[in-house]
Length: 289
Image: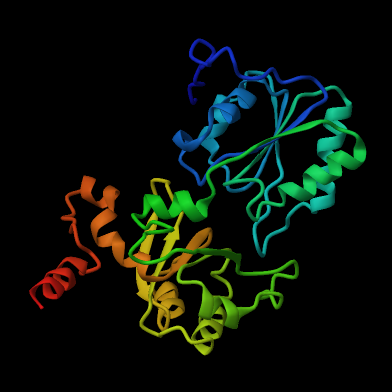
C-alpha cells in the first residue's frame, strides 16, 4: 500500500481555493512528480474528482485527497480510447454536480494536449475554469536527456510539431520543406509511428542525412531511454533499439550538446565534456590565424 503525501502544512496560504463547480485544467509535466507546479499540487489536494490522462505518472495520484474520485480518461494510439467529446462532457457533468474537478494532463494542457478544446467546451457549457500550465515534454523531457531546446551556438529558433494529425496520419498541413529549410531545431511529439516518413520529408527538404537526432523515451522517469542517432538512420535505429512511444524526437545540432549536458549520466559516472561542439578548438585556431 502506497503512503499518501501530506502537503497541507507546507502549501503557501496564497494559493487559490478550489471552488465547487469549477474545472481546473492542469499540466502534470513530462512524468517526474517533482516537476509538478505548486498550483497543480494545490489542485490535487482540494479536488473532489481527478480526471487524468494515460501519460500522468501514477505516483502523482498519491497526492489526491482521501475520498476523491479518480477517473481515467487516457488515450493511447492503437488502443480503445474515450472520445474527446465524451471527456469534455464528463468534465461538464461533474462540475454541474457541484464537484471540484481537476483535469490532469501530461505535459502542458495547451501544447498538443487538446486543453484548448476542453476549455472551449466548458465555455460553451457555462462552466468556470482555471488553466494551470505544466512543463511540456518537448522542453522538460529533453532537459532530462541533457539536450537543450535552444543554445546560442546552435539555434535562435525552435519548431515544435506533432507527428500525426487527427486521423493518425502524418500531418499534411505541415510545410515540411519550409520547416526543413527554416528551423535549425525541430522537436516532434507523437512522431514515432511515422518517423521514417517524416525523416524522408525533412531530407527531401534539404536536411542532411548525418544531422544529429535524439529520441527520448519515457522522459524524466526511471525507465528513461535516450537514443542518439542521425536523421538518415533514426527510424531504423529506433526500431532496432525497440524504442516505443511515448517519445520526443529532437532534430538538430543541439543533440550534440548531450556529451556535455547529460547530467543524469554524470550521476552514474559518465565523463562530460565542456566543449561538445568543438568550438574551443575552432576559436583557438581563429585566434592563432
